Length: 284
Ligand code: FAD
Image (cartoon, rainbow, N blue to C red; front, top):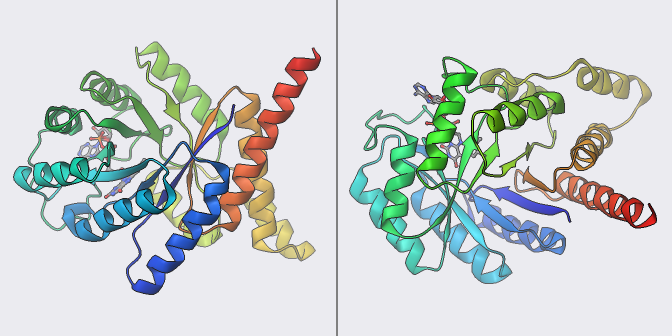
């Protein structure tokens, strides 16, 4: 059965938060397993994140996870925030180091596994962590990345969500290396819809994500044929999630960018692929 989760970021204005509420309510039709809200590094967006997580869970009834980062924060504040989440019935955390853009590089934890263990010691949260099919830009090697991921698992993480990728073969290879390295927790593919191809290419470069030739070609050919970027992005997304479903993946985590159209396309395509697969199994 297809399992979907959606990622959102807190709005920066009342208008943006109203828009977010509408998006969450429209995407609720896909009965997400959970939804999550990002958290600004250095605690810059702490209150906005907290308010969004609590409001989203209360209005949608969907289990909602708070992302939480430690770079540039102090331990007392983090533990107080974790207490506040637990008291507000938020039982899931996506635990992260945090973007290096944080002005202060103070770090209250030696590493992310230590952070995961500290959160678990606060309350029995369900903790997801991040992982990188194409290697984190700051990691020395895939071996180092996998050792950190394994340590996060040992510290109590129960799932890992990937950085976005466009070449599924890189994800499949990563999962197989992770399994060989003794990582047994579910690895959920993170899917990024392309609303703005130029921006996505910049992000991909910063993250070390490979943009395959067929993606460039799709946008170049689309421009010649008069297809809109949204149509091109829809076709690419459908193909990507279809391939994941046929490769046996039951869950996807969609980076919604707080927008409905492409998250809807990806969800529908993923669910349809699973329904077709289940039909084929019944017929066989
Ligand atoms: P770790 O697990 O600590 O590290 C991952 C790998 O990168 C390891 O190999 C580690 O050795 C290496 N590494 C990372 N940073 C360094 C460093 N400074 N020096 C040396 N090696 C390093 N960021 C936010 O601020 N807010 C969010 O809400 C947020 N959500 C995210 C959600 C997902 C699903 C993903 C994939 C990323 C998210 N990020 C977010 C970005 C994340 O904080 C960065 O990718 C960060 O650099 C690494 O975080 P991590 O927890 O994976 O790090």
